[in-house]
Amino acid sequence: MTEEKLQQEIGKEYVFPKKDDNKPVTEEIIKKLPKVELHCHLDGSMRVETILEEAERQKVKLPADNPDKLKKMVQPGFDCKSLVDYLKAFDITLSVLQEEEALYRAAYELIEDVAKENVKYIEVRYSPILHQKKGLGLVDILEAVLQGLKQGERDFGVKSGVIICGIRNIDPKYSMKLAELSVAYKNKGVVAFDLAGAEEDYPAKEHREAFQLVLKNNLNSTTHAGEAYGPESIHQAIHYCGAHRIGHGTRLFENGDLLNYVNDHRIPLEICISSNIQTKAVKRFEDHPVRLYYDLGLRITLNTDNRLVSDTTLTKEFMIAHEYYGFTLEEIKDIIIQSFKSAFIPYREKRDMLRKVIKELEKF
Ligand SMILES: O=c1[nH]cnc2c1ncn2[C@H]1C[C@H](O)[C@@H](CO)O1
Ligand SMILES: [Zn+2]
Image (cartoon, rainbow, N blue to C red; front, top):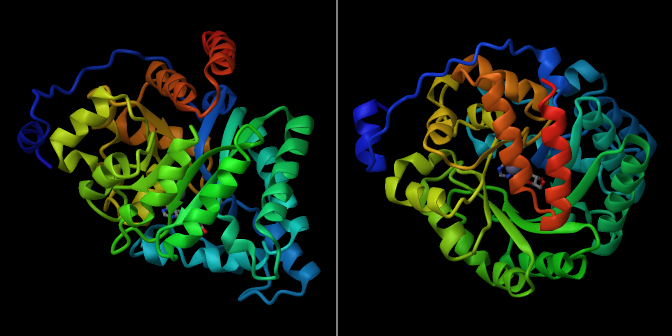
């Protein structure tokens, strides 16, 4: 999109600012910065070795029996054609996530993994209804993950919250059940309700009853939107479902009026750059609107989406932000602070956490 076209769309004069912060940005530094992750799917972020071991333990047949081959099958990479194509990888991860032991392990290991890159707080999302193939109940599926996360916090010091996902392409009556589960676990580990899955042909407003229940019970919500469909999808997420944050929001720039609304209301965007290139939300890294969003003052956060499926880490995502869009160290620290501000943590607790984080960030 040309600069002129952008200005027409956004309805305000847009000037690309010059940045004169010359501090080096290296993987080593980014890894050490205290970070927060708000958009990370449990079933997309397992270790490949764990999938193999769990398959053996549970006698589940996988389409490949060694880590390299299996990786190729669960990492669609940049040749992936669409979101629907990308989501096929989850058939494999979900095949070994149908027992409490495996759910506990996946949650625990995710905390161990993110601790290695100094993530201080993570919101882990998944959809319990996708884990019922062996007959587990929704509460057991949630408890297993909560226990894994808690043990992870004890061992590695990373705090976390669960976001429960309804699925767009599954009957909305199940979203309602998941919304009820989310409300029942409010202040007991669940921090929000979300809607994931195939976006095109499955509008969020079909699930608005679930969102209404969540809202009326004073629980947070976020919605995947503007990833495989245009800004109309983001409009629905906000105005029909009352989403407090937007998952991706990649195509928000196509509607300047809505973009201004999102900006004015400080609605955070959970941006996942690598995932967006893979699902073809944007064609090339160069085309991603993250720089534009930041410069316009939108509240943005950087995330992995799926550590295994997208073959990434939060450190990698920040390095991409630096290498492709010129984010400086000061800007990266600013995004980290914005991310903390966007977390679904009670205000006073968040304020205290933020103070500590800012002190730590000042050392870099
Ligand atoms: O980027 C995504 N967009 C929409 N749905 C997604 C994305 N990543 C994962 N999912 C789906 C697949 C998982 O099974 C489900 C719950 O984590 O959410
Ligand atoms: Zn996602």
